[in-house]
Length: 290
Image (cartoon, rainbow, N blue to C red; front, side):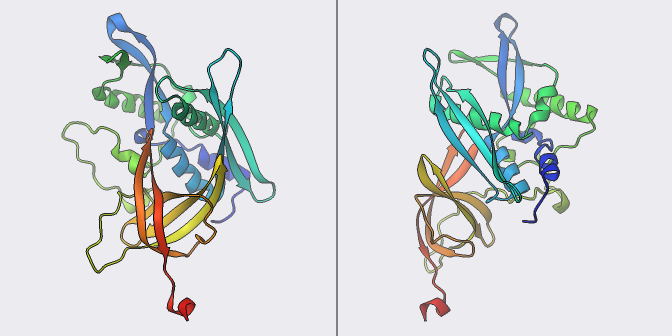
Protein backbone atom coordinates (compact mmCIF):
# COMPACT_ATOMS: atom_id res chain seq x y z
CA UNK A 1 0.00 0.00 0.00
CA UNK A 2 1.30 3.45 -0.94
CA UNK A 3 2.37 5.64 1.96
CA UNK A 4 -0.06 8.35 3.03
CA UNK A 5 0.59 11.47 5.07
CA UNK A 6 -1.12 12.04 8.41
CA UNK A 7 -3.68 14.49 7.01
CA UNK A 8 -4.78 12.04 4.32
CA UNK A 9 -5.12 9.21 6.85
CA UNK A 10 -7.15 11.47 9.14
CA UNK A 11 -9.53 12.45 6.33
CA UNK A 12 -10.02 8.87 5.11
CA UNK A 13 -10.64 7.48 8.61
CA UNK A 14 -13.29 10.15 9.22
CA UNK A 15 -15.38 9.36 6.13
CA UNK A 16 -19.04 8.75 7.01
CA UNK A 17 -20.18 5.14 7.17
CA UNK A 18 -23.11 3.54 5.38
CA UNK A 19 -26.29 3.18 7.47
CA UNK A 20 -25.77 -0.60 7.41
CA UNK A 21 -22.51 -0.16 9.32
CA UNK A 22 -24.26 1.43 12.30
CA UNK A 23 -25.93 -0.16 15.29
CA UNK A 24 -28.38 1.73 17.49
CA UNK A 25 -28.89 1.49 21.24
CA UNK A 26 -31.44 2.99 23.56
CA UNK A 27 -30.07 5.82 25.67
CA UNK A 28 -33.33 6.80 27.38
CA UNK A 29 -36.82 5.32 27.51
CA UNK A 30 -40.26 6.65 28.39
CA UNK A 31 -42.03 3.41 29.11
CA UNK A 32 -45.47 4.96 29.55
CA UNK A 33 -45.33 6.31 25.98
CA UNK A 34 -43.43 3.34 24.48
CA UNK A 35 -40.84 5.78 23.13
CA UNK A 36 -37.10 6.08 23.51
CA UNK A 37 -34.00 7.96 22.36
CA UNK A 38 -31.69 5.93 20.10
CA UNK A 39 -27.98 6.67 19.66
CA UNK A 40 -25.77 5.29 16.84
CA UNK A 41 -22.45 3.44 17.06
CA UNK A 42 -20.16 2.17 14.32
CA UNK A 43 -19.87 -1.63 14.44
CA UNK A 44 -16.50 -3.17 15.23
CA UNK A 45 -16.55 -5.00 11.90
CA UNK A 46 -16.86 -1.70 10.03
CA UNK A 47 -14.08 -0.15 12.15
CA UNK A 48 -11.74 -3.02 11.29
CA UNK A 49 -12.61 -2.79 7.60
CA UNK A 50 -12.00 0.99 7.62
CA UNK A 51 -8.56 0.58 9.21
CA UNK A 52 -7.61 -2.20 6.76
CA UNK A 53 -8.77 -0.01 3.89
CA UNK A 54 -6.97 3.17 4.95
CA UNK A 55 -3.66 1.97 6.42
CA UNK A 56 -3.50 -1.69 5.34
CA UNK A 57 -3.95 -4.91 7.27
CA UNK A 58 -0.36 -4.61 8.55
CA UNK A 59 -0.57 -0.89 9.29
CA UNK A 60 -2.54 -1.06 12.53
CA UNK A 61 -3.18 -3.23 15.56
CA UNK A 62 -5.11 -3.01 18.82
CA UNK A 63 -4.35 -3.92 22.42
CA UNK A 64 -6.56 -4.35 25.48
CA UNK A 65 -5.91 -3.79 29.17
CA UNK A 66 -8.27 -4.47 32.08
CA UNK A 67 -8.92 -1.49 34.33
CA UNK A 68 -9.86 -1.91 37.97
CA UNK A 69 -10.96 0.78 40.40
CA UNK A 70 -11.91 0.09 43.99
CA UNK A 71 -15.68 0.15 44.41
CA UNK A 72 -16.30 0.68 40.68
CA UNK A 73 -17.41 -1.65 37.91
CA UNK A 74 -14.49 -3.22 36.08
CA UNK A 75 -13.67 -1.80 32.67
CA UNK A 76 -11.61 -2.54 29.59
CA UNK A 77 -9.22 -0.14 27.89
CA UNK A 78 -8.47 -0.46 24.15
CA UNK A 79 -5.59 1.13 22.30
CA UNK A 80 -5.60 1.38 18.50
CA UNK A 81 -2.11 1.83 17.04
CA UNK A 82 -1.52 3.15 13.50
CA UNK A 83 1.82 3.12 11.73
CA UNK A 84 3.26 6.37 10.37
CA UNK A 85 6.42 6.06 8.22
CA UNK A 86 8.39 8.79 9.99
CA UNK A 87 7.17 8.17 13.56
CA UNK A 88 6.39 4.47 13.83
CA UNK A 89 3.23 3.28 15.62
CA UNK A 90 1.16 5.90 17.46
CA UNK A 91 -1.49 4.64 19.89
CA UNK A 92 -4.69 6.30 21.10
CA UNK A 93 -6.58 4.79 24.04
CA UNK A 94 -10.10 4.83 25.44
CA UNK A 95 -12.15 2.55 27.64
CA UNK A 96 -15.60 1.30 28.54
CA UNK A 97 -17.15 -0.42 31.54
CA UNK A 98 -18.01 -4.10 31.29
CA UNK A 99 -21.58 -4.60 30.13
CA UNK A 100 -24.39 -6.32 32.01
CA UNK A 101 -24.62 -9.15 29.45
CA UNK A 102 -21.39 -11.02 28.64
CA UNK A 103 -19.53 -8.36 30.64
CA UNK A 104 -15.91 -8.66 29.42
CA UNK A 105 -16.83 -9.15 25.77
CA UNK A 106 -19.12 -6.12 25.93
CA UNK A 107 -16.40 -4.05 27.55
CA UNK A 108 -13.85 -5.06 24.91
CA UNK A 109 -16.26 -4.28 22.07
CA UNK A 110 -17.31 -0.89 23.43
CA UNK A 111 -13.76 0.16 24.33
CA UNK A 112 -12.65 -0.42 20.73
CA UNK A 113 -15.53 1.70 19.45
CA UNK A 114 -14.46 4.54 21.75
CA UNK A 115 -10.78 4.19 20.83
CA UNK A 116 -11.77 4.42 17.16
CA UNK A 117 -13.47 7.76 17.84
CA UNK A 118 -10.10 9.04 19.14
CA UNK A 119 -8.84 8.53 15.57
CA UNK A 120 -11.89 10.27 14.08
CA UNK A 121 -13.67 7.06 13.07
CA UNK A 122 -17.39 7.68 13.50
CA UNK A 123 -16.82 11.00 15.27
CA UNK A 124 -19.33 12.66 12.95
CA UNK A 125 -22.10 10.75 14.78
CA UNK A 126 -21.65 12.93 17.86
CA UNK A 127 -23.27 15.86 16.03
CA UNK A 128 -26.59 14.14 15.36
CA UNK A 129 -29.79 15.48 16.81
CA UNK A 130 -31.86 13.36 19.19
CA UNK A 131 -33.65 10.51 17.39
CA UNK A 132 -36.88 9.21 18.94
CA UNK A 133 -38.14 5.72 18.14
CA UNK A 134 -40.87 3.32 19.20
CA UNK A 135 -39.75 0.73 21.75
CA UNK A 136 -40.99 -2.67 22.86
CA UNK A 137 -40.44 -4.97 25.83
CA UNK A 138 -38.21 -7.99 25.36
CA UNK A 139 -37.89 -10.04 28.53
CA UNK A 140 -36.89 -7.55 31.22
CA UNK A 141 -35.37 -5.07 28.77
CA UNK A 142 -36.66 -2.46 26.37
CA UNK A 143 -35.44 -2.75 22.76
CA UNK A 144 -35.80 -1.03 19.40
CA UNK A 145 -38.20 -2.99 17.12
CA UNK A 146 -36.81 -4.02 13.74
CA UNK A 147 -39.42 -1.93 11.94
CA UNK A 148 -37.78 1.21 13.36
CA UNK A 149 -34.59 0.65 11.36
CA UNK A 150 -35.94 2.61 8.39
CA UNK A 151 -36.67 5.54 10.71
CA UNK A 152 -33.11 5.45 12.05
CA UNK A 153 -31.50 5.11 8.63
CA UNK A 154 -33.49 8.07 7.32
CA UNK A 155 -32.54 10.25 10.30
CA UNK A 156 -28.86 9.44 9.73
CA UNK A 157 -28.94 10.05 5.97
CA UNK A 158 -30.86 13.32 6.44
CA UNK A 159 -28.15 14.41 8.91
CA UNK A 160 -25.37 13.63 6.42
CA UNK A 161 -27.29 15.43 3.69
CA UNK A 162 -27.41 18.60 5.80
CA UNK A 163 -23.63 18.38 6.15
CA UNK A 164 -23.30 17.72 2.40
CA UNK A 165 -21.57 14.40 3.15
CA UNK A 166 -21.94 11.14 1.25
CA UNK A 167 -21.68 7.81 3.11
CA UNK A 168 -19.27 5.11 2.01
CA UNK A 169 -20.60 1.77 0.71
CA UNK A 170 -21.40 -0.78 3.42
CA UNK A 171 -18.46 -2.80 4.77
CA UNK A 172 -18.83 -6.35 3.52
CA UNK A 173 -20.83 -8.74 5.68
CA UNK A 174 -22.33 -5.99 7.83
CA UNK A 175 -24.57 -4.95 4.94
CA UNK A 176 -26.34 -8.32 5.22
CA UNK A 177 -27.06 -7.92 8.94
CA UNK A 178 -29.43 -4.98 8.56
CA UNK A 179 -33.14 -5.79 8.11
CA UNK A 180 -34.38 -4.77 4.66
CA UNK A 181 -37.59 -2.94 3.97
CA UNK A 182 -40.53 -5.19 3.15
CA UNK A 183 -40.33 -6.29 -0.48
CA UNK A 184 -36.95 -4.61 -0.98
CA UNK A 185 -34.45 -6.42 -3.17
CA UNK A 186 -31.11 -4.64 -3.15
CA UNK A 187 -29.53 -4.10 -6.57
CA UNK A 188 -25.86 -4.90 -6.97
CA UNK A 189 -23.75 -1.77 -6.58
CA UNK A 190 -21.79 -0.61 -9.64
CA UNK A 191 -18.13 -1.60 -9.65
CA UNK A 192 -16.98 1.95 -8.97
CA UNK A 193 -19.05 2.09 -5.78
CA UNK A 194 -17.68 -1.08 -4.22
CA UNK A 195 -15.60 -0.65 -1.06
CA UNK A 196 -11.85 -0.89 -1.52
CA UNK A 197 -11.46 -3.60 1.13
CA UNK A 198 -12.65 -7.05 0.12
CA UNK A 199 -15.77 -8.24 1.98
CA UNK A 200 -15.68 -11.19 4.32
CA UNK A 201 -17.03 -14.17 2.41
CA UNK A 202 -19.27 -16.99 3.67
CA UNK A 203 -17.46 -20.02 5.03
CA UNK A 204 -16.37 -22.12 2.01
CA UNK A 205 -18.40 -25.27 1.37
CA UNK A 206 -16.73 -28.70 1.41
CA UNK A 207 -14.80 -29.45 -1.77
CA UNK A 208 -15.84 -32.50 -3.81
CA UNK A 209 -13.59 -35.52 -3.52
CA UNK A 210 -10.46 -35.25 -5.64
CA UNK A 211 -10.33 -31.45 -5.46
CA UNK A 212 -8.27 -29.40 -3.02
CA UNK A 213 -8.98 -25.85 -1.86
CA UNK A 214 -5.94 -23.59 -1.93
CA UNK A 215 -5.72 -20.32 0.00
CA UNK A 216 -2.99 -17.71 -0.47
CA UNK A 217 -1.73 -15.62 2.45
CA UNK A 218 -2.05 -11.94 1.45
CA UNK A 219 -0.76 -10.54 4.75
CA UNK A 220 0.08 -11.80 8.24
CA UNK A 221 0.62 -9.98 11.54
CA UNK A 222 1.50 -11.31 14.98
CA UNK A 223 -0.58 -9.88 17.84
CA UNK A 224 0.41 -10.35 21.49
CA UNK A 225 -2.66 -9.86 23.74
CA UNK A 226 -2.61 -11.52 26.17
CA UNK A 227 -1.64 -14.63 24.17
CA UNK A 228 0.07 -14.68 20.79
CA UNK A 229 -2.28 -14.79 17.80
CA UNK A 230 -1.48 -14.50 14.10
CA UNK A 231 -3.90 -12.27 12.17
CA UNK A 232 -4.19 -13.38 8.53
CA UNK A 233 -5.73 -12.05 5.35
CA UNK A 234 -6.39 -15.03 3.08
CA UNK A 235 -7.42 -15.14 -0.57
CA UNK A 236 -9.15 -17.99 -2.36
CA UNK A 237 -9.68 -17.77 -6.14
CA UNK A 238 -13.34 -17.25 -6.88
CA UNK A 239 -14.27 -16.66 -3.22
CA UNK A 240 -12.49 -13.40 -2.37
CA UNK A 241 -10.61 -12.47 0.80
CA UNK A 242 -11.35 -13.37 4.43
CA UNK A 243 -9.88 -12.41 7.80
CA UNK A 244 -8.73 -15.33 9.93
CA UNK A 245 -6.80 -15.88 13.16
CA UNK A 246 -4.35 -18.69 13.91
CA UNK A 247 -3.67 -19.21 17.61
CA UNK A 248 0.03 -18.76 18.43
CA UNK A 249 3.01 -17.53 16.44
CA UNK A 250 3.19 -18.91 12.89
CA UNK A 251 6.35 -17.48 11.25
CA UNK A 252 5.88 -19.83 8.30
CA UNK A 253 2.70 -17.96 7.30
CA UNK A 254 4.13 -15.14 5.21
CA UNK A 255 2.72 -13.20 2.24
CA UNK A 256 2.54 -15.46 -0.80
CA UNK A 257 2.43 -18.74 1.14
CA UNK A 258 -0.21 -21.12 -0.21
CA UNK A 259 -2.25 -23.33 2.13
CA UNK A 260 -4.35 -26.41 1.61
CA UNK A 261 -6.38 -28.65 3.91
CA UNK A 262 -7.58 -25.55 5.77
CA UNK A 263 -10.04 -26.02 8.60
CA UNK A 264 -11.78 -22.67 9.07
CA UNK A 265 -14.20 -22.17 11.95
CA UNK A 266 -16.70 -19.31 11.61
CA UNK A 267 -16.95 -17.06 14.68
CA UNK A 268 -19.25 -14.14 15.47
CA UNK A 269 -18.68 -11.69 18.31
CA UNK A 270 -21.11 -8.82 18.60
CA UNK A 271 -21.48 -7.84 14.92
CA UNK A 272 -17.92 -8.89 14.08
CA UNK A 273 -17.55 -11.96 11.84
CA UNK A 274 -14.21 -13.72 11.45
CA UNK A 275 -12.62 -17.16 11.16
CA UNK A 276 -10.30 -19.29 13.29
CA UNK A 277 -7.76 -21.25 11.25
CA UNK A 278 -7.64 -24.55 13.14
CA UNK A 279 -5.46 -26.56 10.75
CA UNK A 280 -3.65 -26.24 7.42
CA UNK A 281 -0.87 -27.62 5.26
CA UNK A 282 1.63 -25.51 3.33
CA UNK A 283 1.71 -26.12 -0.42
CA UNK A 284 5.26 -26.89 -1.50
CA UNK A 285 6.10 -25.95 -5.09
CA UNK A 286 7.99 -28.32 -7.35
CA UNK A 287 11.05 -26.04 -7.15
CA UNK A 288 11.01 -26.15 -3.35
CA UNK A 289 10.49 -29.90 -3.32
CA UNK A 290 13.50 -30.35 -5.58
